[in-house]
Amino acid sequence: MENISNFIHDIIDRDLAEGFARRIHTRFPPEPNGYLHIGSAKAIWINWITARKYGGTFNLRYDDTNPVKEDDEYIRAIESDLRWLGAVPDGGIFFGSDYFDKCYEFALGLIRDGHAYVCDLTSEQMREYRGTLTQPGRESPYRNRTAEENLDLFQRMKNGEFEDGSRTLRAKIDMTSSNMNMRDPAIYRILRSTHHRQGDKWCIYPLYDYAHPIQDALEGITHSLCSIEFENHRPLYDWVIEKIGFEAPPRQYEFARLNVSYTVLSKRYLRYLVESGLVDGWDDPRMPTLSGLRRRGYTPSSIFEFVRMAGVSKTYSLVDVGMLEFCIRDELNKTAQRRIAVTDPIKVTITNYPEDQVEQITIPNNPEDENAGSRDVPICREIYIERSDFMADPPAKFHRLSVGREVRLVGTYFIKCNEAITDQNGEIVELMCTYDPDTRSGHAPDGRKVKGTIHWVSARHAIDAKLRLYDRLFTIDNLNDMPEGTNFDDFLNKDSLTELTGCKLEPSLANASPDERFQFVRTGYFYLDSKDKQSFNRIVPLKDSWAKISK
RNA sequence: UGGGAUGUCGCCAAGCGGUAAGGCACCAGACUUUGACUCUGGCAUUCGCAGGUUCGAUUCCUGCCAUCCCAGCCA
Image 1 (cartoon, rainbow, N blue to C red):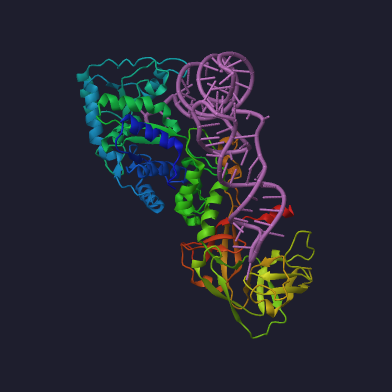
Image 2: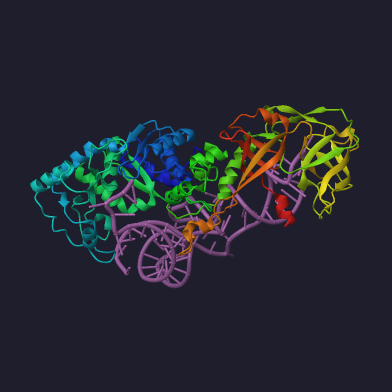
């Protein structure tokens, strides 16, 4: 976790050496217009770990300068997700909108200094005047108003004397710049919309390019680490900082955003999934949101580990979901207690096992960790095993149960199958087996070996439960590859959720508390859903090398 | 088409003039009371392409090519 990327080290070490910064102060500035997702986790991690690693400070700041998109629901969700991740904003929690007064004052200063002017062009006209990628823009006819006139007009904008969209305050930079962002960008607009925090106090709102550097500077941010699409905005960021004249200017650095295969991370699509009812909500376990991953059973540490492992660079990248899955398996293998669950039960009668006998088998909770202790699991004459652990016509490398074959029940006895009972359709309904009473320890005194070990649960003691299996929601590797004219829905996997009912679980699971994670032996890692206490969500399956062999 | 950025193994990613780290995935084998885990071995004579400089270039230069970002009064 502490081993952060060279990309970050290079930047910070150089800035420290140069004397640009003596302390490190970073921030995570989400716009409260949606829930945080695994891509956000990268931005959080980078800013948080940088501050932490260098003994600096980390802020959370809601970038709430656009009242029409933002909502308090998202603020609460973001805060709870951040708390869950454990990225503590030790520098404080701020709102960009709390700086509106300052932004306004600074704008007045910019106008006085001749760096900004009120423009009466409509948005369509402004677009025409802006030029194109290859052609320079033309100067607005309002560009050379006097400071006095601009001051008067801007104050009247603020006072609500003009219609929405009728005027803007623009930075006076260079209409011929090859960087479109520098062609006199609008920095204030007129917009009558109730702000979630400021109410109706304002009818003019600062735009991102103007507000963000001010927010950073005011908070004493030294390193404004953001994603790469803002690279083109850096000259403007620096322009604002310079023209306002902050003493300790922050520096912006960009890194590539995180993309994960088979995963949609665009808020637009995520919102669509929620609003169309295709998923249960932002925290549906199929969602790549932090709350979805949390409900699925992912741990904060596995998410941060994934982000760290994926690395930080400026290269466009599409990280394989397999890496995320590796991270959670790797962690849970060490920490999750083992339990037995039979997902597709078939009954086995152990014909030589005394009818009224019940034994308690002591099974370690985690063979990887002896401190995890053990538990007693009952066994009796009738048990359930996994239907797929028996084959009437076993192929060459299959070494589980079949008529005439012997296997071990995990934790205890060897059993041998003598007969498979079928119904009139030829379906196998029950297996008749015998056990070897001398193999209770899991080993045979005569030294004979079995090739397979299968999981089981006592039929008289088992509890019923529902298992939810999640598959990838999207069938397309990369949404960016969605062919022109095709529909997002076409790539939606309608069968991404499978609910298995009638699963038989070992009795100790009756006492499982919500939020506990288990490894169901030979099956996968599961998480007891706190929203539906009868269901276990499968976080991720165990690796299945048999699948490879048999195919 | 102007500007900016990026191109190293199937996927991430180190390297920054001295002869290609690591992880995921994959393959082979060992081990195994989870066909999991663990362990061992394998996996880029080559760094987008083409030239050039140099004793020597993934690293420097030149020219191409590809991909991404920018023409919101969104962030």
